[in-house]
Length: 160
Figure 1 (tube, rainbow, N blue to C red):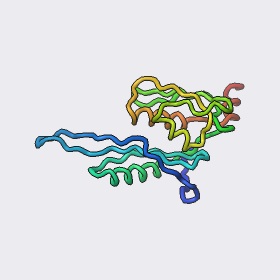
Figure 2: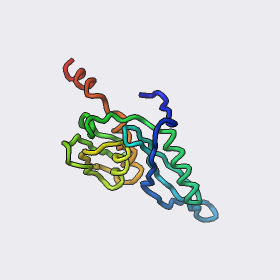
Figure 3: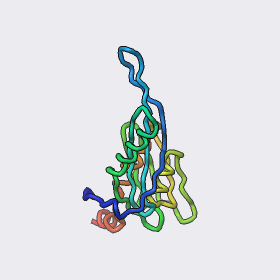
């Protein structure tokens, strides 16, 4: 899973999930910057998330997309859904994800939905638990999707 993915062969789409103003208090006052969280994916099982901060929106967006390109992973998708139930954890956030039957659609938080769509998942049930900050929920979902296993390996674990 830790092998390098060649992104030149992928047709990646980009989506900005959140833009927020963050500040740092220094002796002379507050320094304001914009934080952008971006997701890229090919709708066929590859996704990446990234975060960028800058004083200008365009610079922050560019940095977030560059960061997302560096963090691309492959997601195991079976018939438009995930192969098994999983809980993604990051910081104080947890995201419970369950496979869903065809026709269910993506039942998810508004921040998680673009991530799942760009991964190519068409049917899934999710529930966000704990902290609901943008970056924590997105990162928890990403961690959960990264840790998905193939159906065959899950069967081997259960049968042994």
